[in-house]
Amino acid sequence: MGGGNCEEILEGAGADNVPTVPPTIARVYVVPNVHHADGSWSAGGQMVEMCGTDGNGARYRTQMLVFRDHRGELIAIEPIYWSGIRIIAGQQPPIAGAGHPAFEC
Image 1 (tube, rainbow, N blue to C red):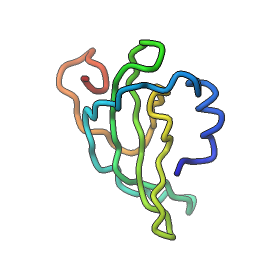
Image 2: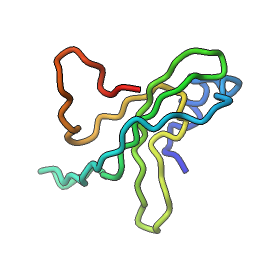
Image 3: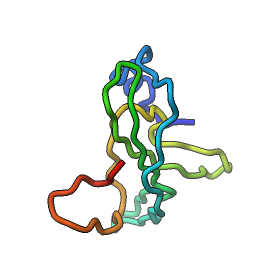
Image 4: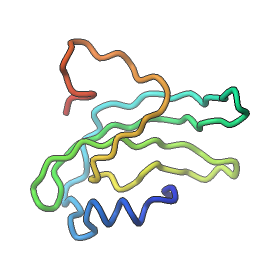
């Protein structure tokens, strides 16, 4: 389901640190595909922003880009939802108020 960095991200987040409660979905928005001048492209999809408490009681806020590949398979970048990863992809919706976090939980 995830990209090529899953094992590394799981190691960093802690396989023994899995939350006992599902995450709260704070926001979902569309990230468009982007074709670059050099001929490469960046996949878009649905950006899911979520938060919760990990297995050790620490708060996390994570972004996960979800899309279907050329075979129709569901892919999530990155599915280790308690990792606290931020994904830089396309334009994010505007956030009101300077100094606020990227999303509220």
